[in-house]
Image 1 (tube, helix red, strand yellow):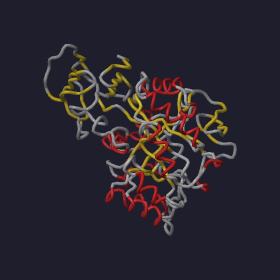
Image 2 (cartoon, one colour):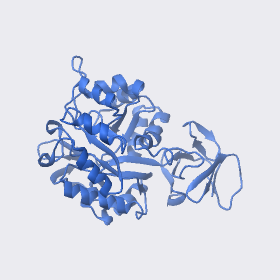
Image 3 (cartoon, helix red, strand yellow):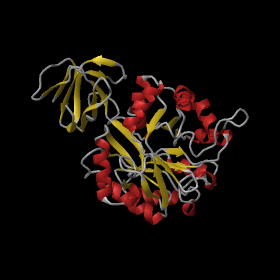
Image 4 (tube, one colour):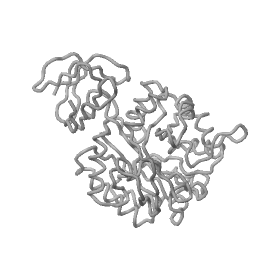
Length: 380
């Protein structure tokens, strides 16, 4: 298959006029060749790498925590309609037995879902700070436990792609030292101060979950986790997730974050719950009731629970908010790919990588979604 005459964002994320040749699941050439068995003339369109959501709990009325093949299939089919070609189903703070069940289901579904494909689990809990648990279930919050993690990791054949910790908790440093070789560790749901966050970066942590949310903020005398990220992002390569629905973070705060992080360290995530792509009402999230009104998800006490957005809409949001297009696209593609160590396989338009592609028109509306070389959405 030859994708011809479009503007593409190449492996340097610069817009160029080149053609893309796809054979099977992979891109085999990005050049000026003009012949193939199947030719798609995409004159007037733009081709981006397929979007990656590394932090999503649910959508379309289904949740990762249901631990059923049907839930992950529904999420997969919903996401691909929104330009997301791959994702990490994300768990909540739960018991060992519940996490084990969820992770086994994710591992099994990696080879069965038919829309966006699954990289593996984003393990958001339970090794977090009680004071910053947000919408996580406090009954299951516990200190980092490397042995428990390894049991879960081995039980799901290594399907965990990232795990969260609060660095101020007992055993955090030892946990990072023992786990970082298996999968990336992320700072999350934490009351850590500036020094404690910097210490985590010194241990090798290079990722921060949903920056600004459920962590110590930046003030002029107490820089907190946010200040530590801003102070170290460009020198140490600290990546940080940003929920870009315009509700979790004010557009001005998003502009500041994108500027401070730089184009290689900003990661757009949905952090969406099952209400995304669905209707307002009452939902369950990790055993807690969430009330969704006008697309805003809250606990009974007013705590923000999760988003009801998606990475595609957030990508358009940040461009509208004034983020440079190049950085916005990298934040939804290659940056999350690097964060979960899959950038050799996907995240950019490059020969040898999987043909995960999103074709948009001049308004950034979706025209085609191609997953591993197969057209999944065709709006031409």
